[in-house]
Structure formats: structure tokens, C-alpha cells
Image (cartoon, rainbow, N blue to C red; front, side, top):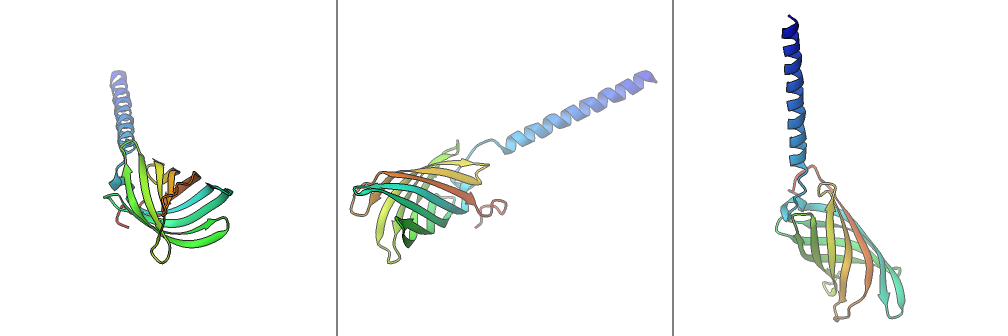
Length: 168
């Protein structure tokens, strides 16, 4: 009888150990850290803050907006921005690349309400929190007249509907 109890205890321990190892493997499979355009596709809310270095000195910049990124890497957005206190509404269009390690690049053309190109920005990105958030820094900013401005601007975004899938 004692041998039967010991055998049942060993079986239960083995069963629970196998179950725990299986769950750990499942959890690891879900968080494999692989990103792609399809993984990060969706609708996002974002803020940008920082400074532009103009010939007249540093000027504060801020923006808030909403963008959509599709599975092919096409980017479109609307934003309200402030440059030195001058507020404007903008439309943005561009392309994004996403690497498997969740880094990437975003190239964006910014237009005024009349459709005139104002500037082109390039951002270096990193996706975090299972690709539900993104952090970025502007690495290049060129005005429509080909004047390059040194930016010190960061960008933070959060997926608006992270549990809905990529059908926004």
C-alpha cells in the first residue's frame, strides 16, 4: 500500500512538473520577440516632444496625433503640432520598415492643410511591450526647401486597440 501511495505521489509530481514546463514553453513561444510590419500594423496614438535647432536658436516642438500603419508598411496620420507656440494641423504620409528584433525606421512627409509639403522626417524606432508601444527619435529633419535642421525630438506611441487584432 505504501509503495502504491509513493507511486501515485511520484506520478502527480511528474504530471505537474510536465504541465509547468509545457506552460513555460507556451509562454516563451508567445513572447518570441519577433516583429514584422504585420505584427505592428494597427492604429496608434502618439506624442512628439523636443527641440529644433534653428539659426536663431533652439525652438520647442510638440505634436500629438493618431496614425495608421498597415501590414505593407504604409503610414498615414493626422496631427496637431506646435513649433515655438505656433499651432498647426498636419497630414502625414510615409513608409515604415520593421526588423525582426523590433527595431525599425519610419520616413514621413508632413503636409499642411493645403497639401503643401512642409518637411520630411526620418525616425529610428523600437517596439516594446509586445509591440503595443513604440519609442523613437528623429534622426533627420529636412524642410521642403532642402534645408536640414538638427532635431532633438522623441516620439512615443501606444497601440489604440492592441487586443482587437490588426484590422483597424
